[in-house]
Picture 1 (tube, rainbow over the protein chains, first blue to last red):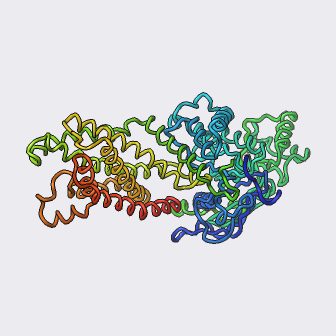
Picture 2 (cartoon, each protein chain N blue to C red):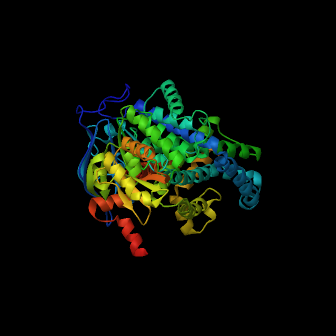
Picture 3 (cartoon, each protein chain N blue to C red):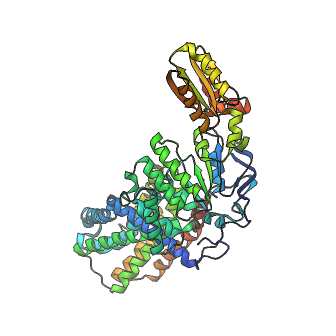
Length: 333
Length: 263
């Protein structure tokens, strides 16, 4: 149905070189390089104002860069915007559907704008409603949808044309955890179907859930990039925090974990003041094994939980600096 | 996808299909929000009653004589008021994310604006029909032919459509709908009243007469009056069309460019 999805076989679906954009005094993008391999998900992680949305808007031909080049599926954003628009889908932070129209009418309209016949557009709309669990709400105007339903409708609208490259600009910002999980599941399904995705996010957890590779940007510049696990090894991934029922057991726990070789790369540590043991976690298997081991040794456990490094901790680990936002907060306080 | 050429150019058939799909969207919006039709349904009724009964006696001696003077002119006024609504509509549209979606889709960007204009011309047609029904109820008589009536409606629509581009441009340039309404009122009031729509300019002071002479609304009102009541038409009709073409040629490309470049 699409005339052609890429002009160069395989390789990078998105290629960005030296991209720069200035708004008045603000350098929104200051020479950004990145690439997304076909069929993979690139997470673009950064705080508010890092330039994430500007990047997505340039890649979707909404604004023109001041300098640099960007190619999507082989098409240049400046020289071939029309062709480029045929192969992309965009879901922004703000639902880009017509609120007064029903879910079905929205999707039908998008289908017609993508040159499907009336029949095809109807069929595709129903298929997408079904897939995104919106069939029951299909006839209601989108303004009556909940936040999660709206975001799903938005995703469905972006998928009508079977885009080769999908941009998700902070797809879960402002959603509650349950709705966020729903959106994540949908994105994971799209990726399983072979979509190439560029995802911007403020959350390390979201990047970890969805992305294969990560580019971290701050103040319009790339400050780190690589595979998620490699970056995680650098910044520290999940940490397991175990609180024993009896504080005296702290050193015994650490010893047992070290003996079993389950204490991760950096080693388990006991925090006497907190009364807790911290174990760096590299895989779900390790997590399961640690819990199993402690149980089989008969330790009594009062509390247990994992946490991911926050964006601030990631920035601190990568650059030795806090995010501009965190700095401002400190100055203000 | 035969209508879509290889390089991504949008062929005329695809363009028409896009305009159709977008016009359908605008119609569905009206269906969802029927109150948005109040201006179209009520304005011609209220204005006709108001002007005929308040000013009719004073201007023309009796209401009956005034109906045939003011109704053809009011067709010009209705068009202008509905055109103003297009600007606020576009402005509101831009505050929702759906415009971003349209602008990232492989469609001609002008099609969003053209679809809006097509639907608004339909609204103008409904308002004009109500105006005429009101007129006939109050004693309007066509001394010429039904063909002339159609010509008058056509002329008013052509001129009204050209005004829409001005208001679309305003809608894209200005920040809020209130600002647009403010500016529009400031321009509309003098244009509407400083014309031959409501009273013969010969009773006005010289400087105002000079203004009414160059006011395109006078030309439209005069042409329509000629078409309804008999009398000279060609000159004022030509001036009206010239204004319509002139306004469109200048403002339509500006509006499309602004729409394209909006960030």
